[in-house]
Length: 283
Ligand code: SF4
Image 1: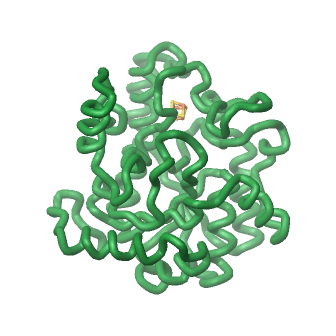
Image 2: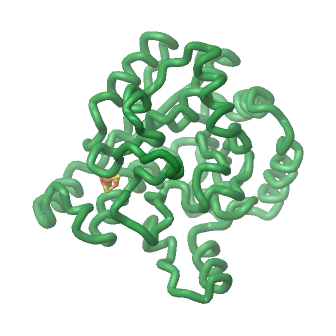
């Protein structure tokens, strides 16, 4: 049964997850997924947004248990190629991908007040859009689960360098978050995709290295980092949308803890993650 987000996080559970994180740090992605599926299925789902990392996990988990669940956040601003990919997932794996939608009234109010392309006008607008179209739908989905699986990798971006393979997601009611390919490189991911003929998003063949909403994602230039094409007009932000805010620390600090630590470490004005999330990934 899913936990109530308001439940206190017990130290014992925290210790168990830290022990699992240490135990699985050098385990293969298959070993971690086998353990997770045994522990949590069917109260666990893979978060997929169209990235190759997520598709590796879907393929790998399906080979272990064809009943594995997959969900995605349909923000209403996804590129058409994302829907093509999820049709391929349905055809190839016979997985009914679970689409989670934003609240219609909230989207209408936001767009009517600030315009359909509000994200380019200010960071505040962009975060409000991510909040309504991504963060809140994710919260609703995760409130029904005991564990979720994401394709975060440590070499993707500075906010992800300490991501743990198993962590307690304190920002989502203390459910378990599993990042089985945390220590994979981009080359590892593409080797798996090619070797196993895994379907992948068509935009990767057009210079994209990360997949998100159509207005906020573009191809990258040679030498740029993988997430440089996300919200490319923003220079000083974490390039996250609030759904993976706790990835900064092993063991998963909450958004508030992270903001405090960042503020102390950097000694600078750090936008509290609570603003930023409730202030990303599923992507
Ligand atoms: Fe809105 Fe862009 Fe965030 Fe998608 S990525 S929810 S379009 S701001």
